[in-house]
Image 1 (cartoon, helix red, strand yellow):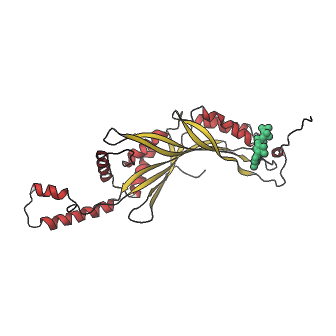
Image 2 (image 1 turned 180 degrees about the vertical axis):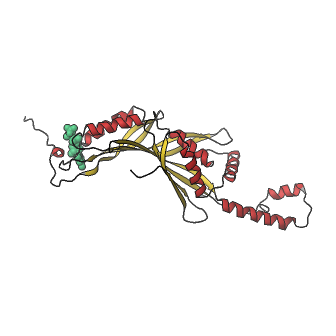
Image 3 (image 1 turned 60 degrees about the vertical axis):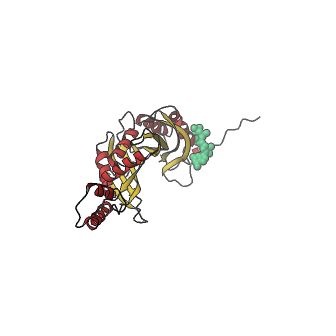
Length: 298
Ligand SMILES: Nc1nc2c(ncn2[C@@H]2O[C@H](COP(=O)(O)OP(=O)(O)OP(=O)(O)O)[C@@H](O)[C@H]2O)c(=O)[nH]1
């Protein structure tokens, strides 16, 4: 049998000499390890094709460089090593390298009062690049919370005051009667509207950190908002949640400002672009606010 050499089209010259900004593969299925958990993920791996004459890059070399992700904790050093391997294996072709990893982290969350707990899933993307000789790592995640409109709350309180004036006009106040009135929908005639809301966080991370502090950042964002959505709830938990909402009345601007202050104080965060979306129940459109710090698009 003749031993044939396999044709290698990628190593040929192209007919249209032109460099390309990004060439690679999107949606590669693989496991990654974050905070000790092995998670199902997809990766987008690419390099720039700076040699304008070269027909193509070597996809398999990028693919194989991802193998370490299945056994080693995903941290800035590991990402840097993988990107360096992308570049080393495309020595004569590429000067920039890119790796995006998309996954979901599951965190067990306790109820506010009862001993119950349940799981919450947070979408996470980690975006690493070597561009112009600089190494960057960005973290994207989303936090879902409840926001009760402060204006609606004030308007509802005014209606309750008005009802109180009407019901108790020219009457001496009896403790038991007022208590019963306060506990009835006859007295508390109005309630404010609230909405399920989402904070989209895009953070530039310090690349010298030993780990990406994903869970501390999610915890910090939820604590700054004060009304993260719950998992398993009994009535006692729901009552505590009603109190948390009442104590954390929020326009979208308030939520964006709270997150801005908290993220600036978060170790490892060196810049961010955040957006909060309040899916209004007053309207069929959303209320949205954005805030940035040390941010310019790469
Ligand atoms: N560059 C490129 N390769 C593609 C594309 N679609 C599929 N491939 C295939 O990806 C496979 C892997 O390419 P290489 O990494 O260059 O494979 P190889 O030449 O066997 O590996 P090396 O010896 O390391 O270069 C080849 O069979 C390509 O045909 C594409 O759009 N662009």
